[in-house]
Length: 73
Image 1: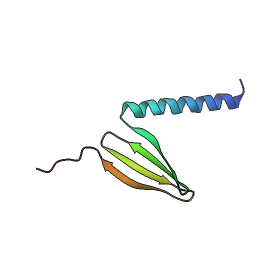
Image 2: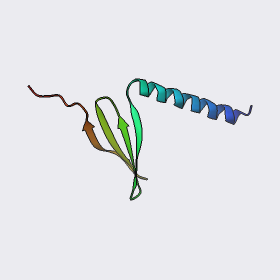
Image 3: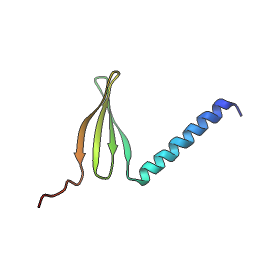
Image 4: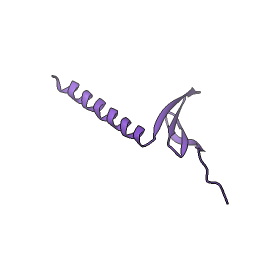
């Protein structure tokens, strides 16, 4: 088996297991869309959703949505 195929298989194996671990802990990723050359990505956790924007020159957090905000007494 050529070395390059082993390297790619190993990388795919690691990605699959990392994704499985993230799902078990309640994390997720989502592609939100592309608009005006900006890529919008969502990261989902049990407590909140984070909206990231990726451009050629920048990467920043755009939105945070809390799912279960604490109630004040």
